[in-house]
Length: 120
Image (tube, rainbow, N blue to C red; front, top):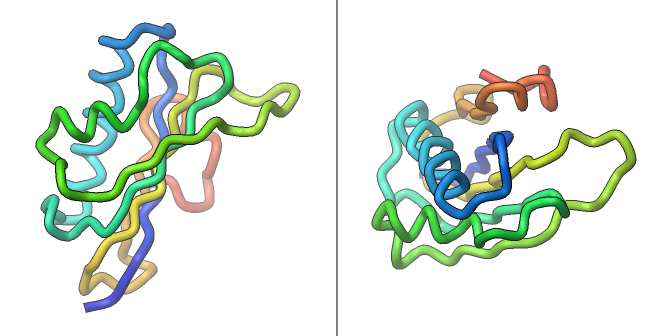
């Protein structure tokens, strides 16, 4: 079993706690499903949010999915002129038998343009 990292992102339509929870939950669920993972495979998860998102912590969505004993942290993404607004990014460290090239990075909706090189 190896330690791997899986990336993902989602753009929110608005800064609203319920909407953030819904969209981040969908992102985390997609990451788990597309990589055949369960919560026990997670080592830690980093969340970043663009500076225009402040209605809630993205990590709250993980707790709502039952991911309760995994270290989670939230941080603010750097404020770069022209960057895509209202984006939550995820970096999850996992235990997996997947080779690096087999890891499915999940960029939902418009965020697929952020990392065309790895978006699945």
